[in-house]
Structure formats: C-alpha cells, structure tokens
Image 1 (cartoon, one colour):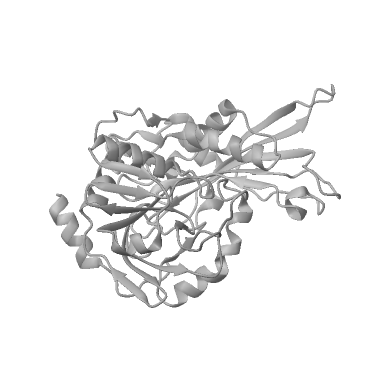
Image 2 (cartoon, rainbow, N blue to C red):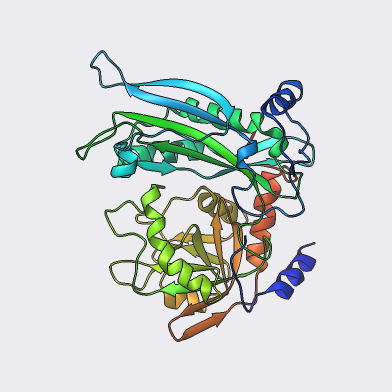
Length: 383
C-alpha cells in the first residue's frame, strides 16, 4: 500500500548517490518465437533480477530500418523505403555523411511493458511520433510519416517480445533515431536519411531503484538551452554538452544536474534528461515550454494530476521557490517519476522528506501503463 511504499522510500532516502550502472539466442530462434507466439515469454538469456540501464543486451535483439531519399520527379517529396526488421547491426556511413559533419540527428525514447495479463503495451506512441516530426521540421530533416513511425515501433516490440522483461522487472526501452546519413560537403540538409528503431531491456535509470529519492546539484554557470535554440527538440546535440558538469556532479555524489534559464539564471528549466515539478500544497508547478523538452511523461503527469483535483500551473519556476516547495520530483520516459530528496544551490541546501504526491502520481501512472488501473485517457496501446 501507499503507506508502506512511502516508508520504504523514506528509508532509502540517500545521503550519497552515484551512477548505476546469459547466452544469447540466434536470429532464427528469435524469429521463431515471434512467428509462433507474438507475445513470447521472457528469454532466459537475460538476468531479469540484475537489469541495469545499458546496451548490454542490444546485440541479441532485432531492429527496424527505413531510408528516405528525394523523389526523382523534382517534386521535393521524400520517398521512404523500408528494410523492415532485421538483426541488430552496425551502420555504414560515408565520412561526409551530414550527421558526422553537421549533426542532423534526433531521437525519441519510449518503453514497452509486459502487463500482468501478458500483454505487451506501449504508452502514447502517437505523441512520440508527433514530437519526432516536430523535431525533424526544426532540424530541416525528412520527417518520418506517423504511420511509418508507429508501424516501426510496434514491429520492433513484436520482434523482440522475449526481451520485454517480466512484469515488474523493467521494460523494453525503444530508441527511434532519425539520422542525416546522406553525404554532403557544404553546410546544408542531408540528401538522404535513415530512420531506425533499436531496443534494449532495461531496469531503473537511477542507481538504488526506481523510487529512491535523487540528489540534484543546481548548475549556475553553464546552460542546457537558450531562447530561440533547440532545447525543445530531442536533437542529439542537446545532450553531450551537459556531460562535463553532469560528470562533475556525479563525482560529488549527486545523481544529476538541475539547469537554470540562460537569461536571468534564476528559473529552473529541467534536469539533464528529465522535466521537473514542484509541489506546494494542492498546487503543482512545472516550468512552461519554450526552451525545455515537451516530455510525454510531463504532459501525462499534468493531465493525471488535474484529474485528481490538483491545480497544475505551467509557469516560470524560480530556484528560490523550488527550495521552499513541499515536494519536488522529476519525470521522463527513462526515469518515469523520481522523487527528489536533496537539492544543492551554491551554499543553499534543502532536504525533502515528503513524497506523498509523487508516490500517488507514480502509482497512478504506472498502474495505467501496466494495465492494473483503468485508463480513462486512452493512453495505452497494445502491440
């Protein structure tokens, strides 16, 4: 029950935190499992009791690939050719591929889960399809059609059914990627693109377990994004620039970094890979969109909280307000929902001891995702 869960979270509240970290089946074995029983049982090639968030098992999986080239009729339309599902493999790239020289690369993060009834389900995949198309437009790339995106994701899950963890042991993380793989020397959009979806079974993102409260360090000098930039897209270039301060923070015992706005250096934006929320009694505040990523989990938590009677505001949220909040939590596909146990902003330090709202929202969200609770929003899609 929730009281027991809360006590467990409080017991695990960290003083120090760090970074988390079987034989495979052949291709024919995997395809036989998919052909014979689409929802194959979890394979014994993975230790489901010791599942981290890594690429450890990707070489055993199948991936989906499609390519886009401009129509030869001069219409400017993109024509997509689907290779479909095949073994996970390396890509061949020309040294002058646009992505290697000018960085045309966007991606999505999604999860497939195995329910208690044995169903394989996705969570709001249409939202990821739309966000990738928006990102492609911002980055001048060929946008994958929505039906292609959804078909690719579902095919990848079906082909890797045995790598979807047992219920309660994790999920199958899906990574759709769009790359400018065509060769080009001068600065410009790629003449061709590769869209692919690969996957990996994963456990909790942060070390210590899914609901262990995390420790955040506020970054005061470097910024993740700026107005007019690409902070609201999942382009690859948004992520590596945060690694220097993130690695420093982790070496100091923090789980991640909380970034401030680039204009006034006082409003929180997001953590390296997830959105942030602050709770003030019956009011929940999360930074408004613009320079931050429009997270699918973020949007879902907003709708879910409002359905439970909370007042939810999307507005500028200062670090001073965050340090006075009753609760703070982060959301994202990888992290799901993580309560924050400690924030350090220069000489200011705040420990949080209450997680009632975070736990209630986490239970409701994961209950919907795993089909143990009613889904009044029609968010869950069965594969």
